[in-house]
Image (cartoon, rainbow, N blue to C red; front, side, top):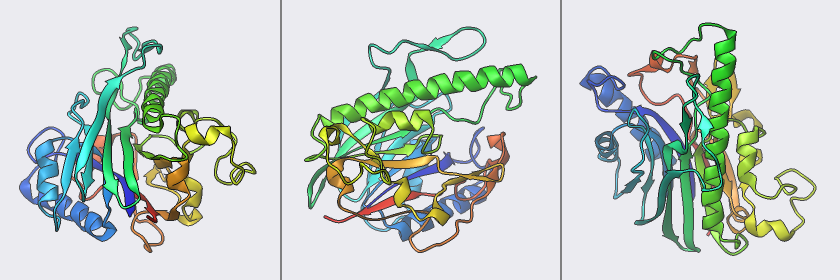
Length: 317
């Protein structure tokens, strides 16, 4: 089976403040997204930046075959939410955005206002596979692209930029901790025998502290001496498949000309041991053709396709 994650970039119907300006641009965007999903042919695809459920329905209507859809009921202020497209029926296990009870609220702006929930909900589902049930959580953590009071994307000065960078980091770390708690529930201390995946747009790279929060006990990451040595942490650990992606494809977005891998798939011990391939973009595609994005996301409003590449992993049954 092929398991993937893809940020669809502002999937809204036309005419609103965030979507394409007209029907023609909307249909062009949908066609570009549908072509990639069709060629990728995932068994289960986690998606992010679904702005309107109706727009996702329009996209699914352009795909061949039967698809099952699950969406989080916890969108952000723009209506953005996460979800799944699946070839088989999905059972929703959790849909939450609340921080764990022991995690205190974090500051979000200069006013001192605090938040105690993730900006976008985390959705966990279970699907049946030939190898048994697979539990998967999808997430979209707080962005590194900063916004400021008054809907600005550029700071008044370096002090403001630094403060709001810190606020975003506080939130992303808290959200990663919340996602980690959900992963612990899905693993239930049984990662050697249970198939679990956590995936989505984590908005930072492999070695970032927020991404590392999700790995569980350290010491056995892919490429380290401990990788091939089973230990007591394997039952509670997740592995980021990034090192399995060919080096020339190890990015999913281009930020101001700089390639970065901010979309991730993490697997439990049992599922990881059956991985046969991993990549970004389309299998066999080679160098990715992605637009370079700047600090103002509005510059790409209505553009076709997505500014992210899908990330995928192929797993034997």
